[in-house]
Length: 337
Ligand code: KG4
Ligand code: ZN
Image 1: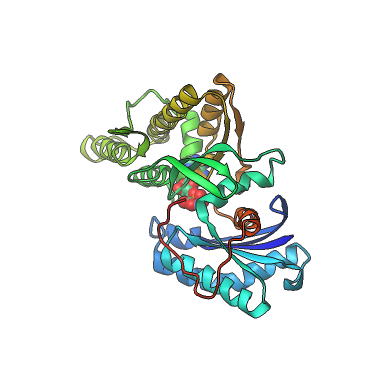
Image 2: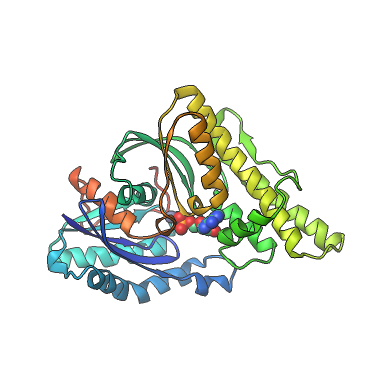
């Protein structure tokens, strides 16, 4: 069964074709990063307009790359939550129109479930149940994936997501948006013990995350050192800040993972989301998993960030479960997983 996936929840317009949830036939991603970089972050209205301009071409390219036409497609899967509402509506409206015009079934997909499903495309043996940690620009969620379409939340970010903290710290260091990848490279040459940063915890919710305080501590320290004390923001300073921030962020993620493994024993763990591309996080989580005898599944770098292949993959499992959308299907800025 061939599913056309469509994704437009943030600043990537994406379309892909996936067969039976696991076989990637094509994946096209049109990034808007250059447009938003000028503003240091995503401007929602500009994102919606850019999606409108790109979506037809991106879907056509995804079909062409798979050497298919709409006649070969069995269903259309589309991200309808969570995300920027205008951005989501652009992809959803397009998908609804396409489904209506072609008579193909429409399947709504939760963006976070999509991130997890990116792993099905590369790990043939991966099957629920497992625990998944999705770390992205908009979300930090630790979840139980009881079945392909049955999720329960263990813990999530109460304020900024991990990727957002990466991007804001990168911005104060003068790195272009989104700064996660640049922070990753800088952290590799910095001293992680140079500055003592610490992410907070949430009283009574040991698996929840809070990164806002960590982000503010980094921003304040950089301002104090540079603006007030006159320190030059050279490469060494940037690298030490990036490494120390990354260390604190990883520690808070690892602490929760360790607690879960200690409490429940070895299990299968699936990492996903844009920040899952971070080399330091990947090796830290791998080390923790190994220590507890847990099996870790990592998505390939090209499927960590937003793409539509992950939406088409999850769409297949939602389709099998009977999930369908009609012309009244709506988009939601927030929605539990
Ligand atoms: O999953 P994603 O594409 O979008 C959301 O659903 O939010 O994640 C984007 C986020 C951005 O914050 C970006 O800076 C971050 O992923 N990111 C990274 C790395 N590559 C991308 N963060 C840390 N290290 C990386 N190597
Ligand atoms: Zn995402």
